[in-house]
Amino acid sequence: MPLHQRVRDRFRPWYLLDVAAFLVGAVGSLRRAASGLEEQAATTTHTSVVAVAAGLLAVVVLRFTVGNLWGYAVEYVNAGGQWSDLPFLLPVGSGLAAAALAYAVTSNFGAAAWGGFWAFVVAAGVVAIAVSFAAGYREPGA
Image 1 (cartoon, rainbow, N blue to C red):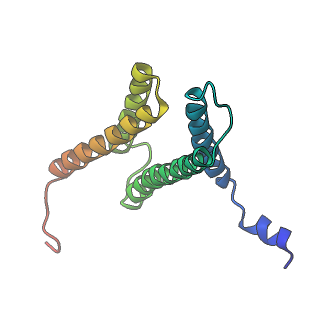
Image 2: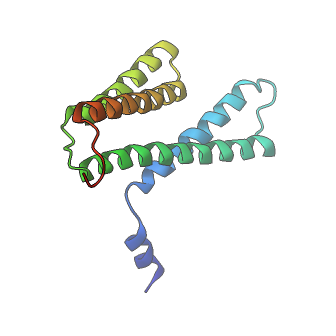
């Protein structure tokens, strides 16, 4: 099989999100480095390595966050729920609201994503406990 056909068969459109996350991380790192180098405009090896590391970290954070959210959604549906149920929408909505609020307060996308993720985690835990109490505890096999 020719190489171009193998690449076309294995390429997935969501890989572009990885590329975008890498570019955001790397370019952000280079911009931060350039803002502190008024007299020195050249990019050093250290700056380049830090930019690549920041880009790779952005890809890891993207994969971790999207993977956890997707896993939460799939497991909820596999357990018999619907994506339109309030116990599913409440953590997602609270995470999005917290991210929007954190971005409005700090103007920092990283802080907004961090705050939104942890608001989602806390809300999902609270909803899981509330649903467990509401449904009642049953022994397995009983």
